[in-house]
Length: 273
Ligand code: PEP
Ligand code: MN
Image (tube, rainbow, N blue to C red; front, side):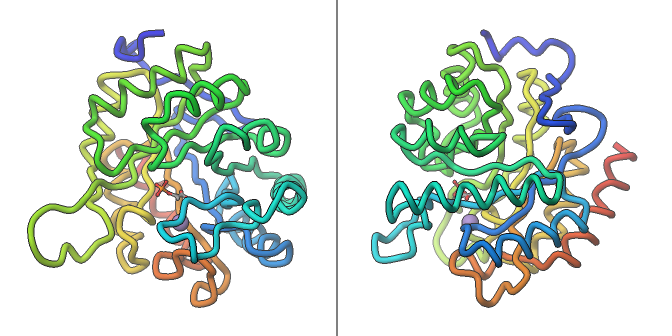
């Protein structure tokens, strides 16, 4: 399971009828957090119409403060099951694959019953036991780089997933900690060299998350175009039909019409590179 031996081409990861790592870029979109069934359905419909193939939405959120909204799943197993069932239903209704984060090992079984792709968040990149548990569910894993990890650490820890026999790993660059004194003007620094590096050093596809990388909706479009130019296999973009009212990460949400413009342009750029 040596991920470092690039097989000369990127592994194609199949999710329903979607191919990640093929010629066409894949777009994952949705709210930061699943907020209500009604809001999720509206966003899913908008994301689908914009051209996204995969719906995302956090049920268990890794918030910096215990006083912030932790995601509906954190209220208990019944609440988690309900929110996960909305994701599944939205996926069926709008013919999209669905993805959500597994924040802890105890959540893996339940989450895997409802979604097509399991996400490991940035903060858990180094959690070997979580990586093994998630890998053993036998579903593709969206694996996000820690904001303080070198590329060597990121790719090396990805092998804890592959070591369980699951090579369906979608790498995701989501920004690293800003440097120096004073304002960086962005939430993190998007490291776009991660894209060609991952593609050269491994056989895994890599996506870019311009939303968490910048934290700013006004930068999502330009960073998405740049990610495509760098050769990314797709993007994960946070989308909300009413960004100002989003319970989590409101400053980085774009609307479905904005997403459509972004996806249309990114598909054109992908054809050129
Ligand atoms: C997310 O994608 O929902 C998320 C919390 O991002 P990250 O783990 O990269 O901070
Ligand atoms: Mn978010």
